[in-house]
Amino acid sequence: MVKKIQLNDEQWKTLQALARANARRLPASAIRVSDRLRSNGLVASDRQGREYLTDQGADRLGQGR
Image 1 (cartoon, rainbow, N blue to C red):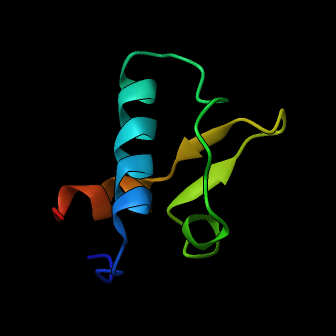
Image 2: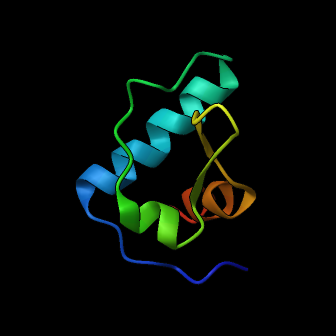
Image 3: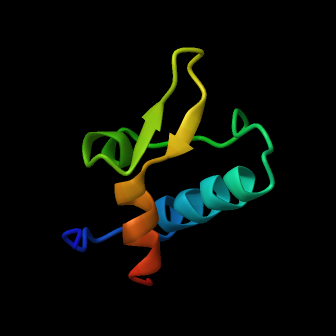
């Protein structure tokens, strides 16, 4: 179980947008990701610098707002 990190509206919407982009296999390059999401392990970057939702991020998203 992931610790339920308090997210503001912008951070919550970012997680949702990354999840939608991943589900549709769309590039997430236009989605602005905060350092807080990265530092808490919810979002990571691949070798090309593309942002993606981590398993921990998906778990947090599943916990609800």
